[in-house]
Length: 68
Image (cartoon, rainbow, N blue to C red):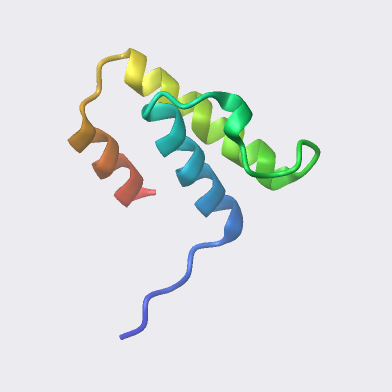
């Protein structure tokens, strides 16, 4: 059975979440500033930073990403 490909906005959110959770700087966003995908990446980054600050561990992060 083939896996469905996630849409680009969801992939951007997940990549941003992982970057934020791992403590990377927001300026490492790989997308242009004015695009909707960049906004999705930044939203994921913010949520990842917040989860990191709230003390979530690596397993909780992976589980959250799997459920998205």
